[in-house]
Image 1 (tube, rainbow, N blue to C red):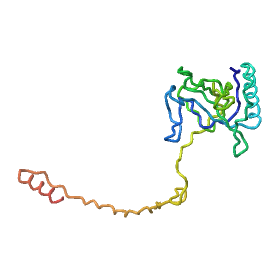
Image 2 (spheres, rainbow, N blue to C red):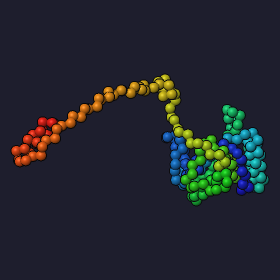
Image 3 (cartoon, rainbow, N blue to C red):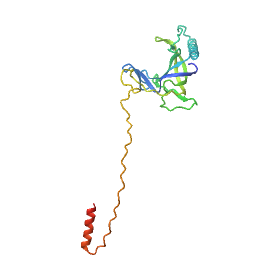
Length: 227
């Protein structure tokens, strides 16, 4: 097996590193799965510039040639560059690690921050993050073709991108929350409340102290009349 190689300052795309995933043809997408399920793997696609792509391709060709020589496989064909050109002139490729080899589960790729602190086991890397990845080249030749796959070993996160909300819809004619506002804000003028005139206080003549029960009854009748 080749020596470990670090691909530096690349942009991670569609990383699946917190657990193993497999492609579901029915759902047409990758779904979480067990490490020993068919197609289970950890993976990350990445975007790189010309300089990085040339250096990585040189490593892959050298690794393949050394393995061909070591195994004395003269019938192994020359390999072709597997990188894909992007619309903005960059290059894309993929590194992965199967969930298991020959029934033995693999250890998930380690993830670290820029200061080499280990990230949590359930850490989810986001698309658009800038990372370094450690890989090992695995040469192969057979019925499925020939090449040098990149077995993912570890990831170092240099700049973590903000997680984007997935939107399955395309723009259509209709309501635009940025322009249409069905609600009108009504500002009510303060209502001036009438000022009450001060109540005149009428002084009442103090009744003479009651002298008997009949006088007390008359005072109570006067309270009732005041109400």
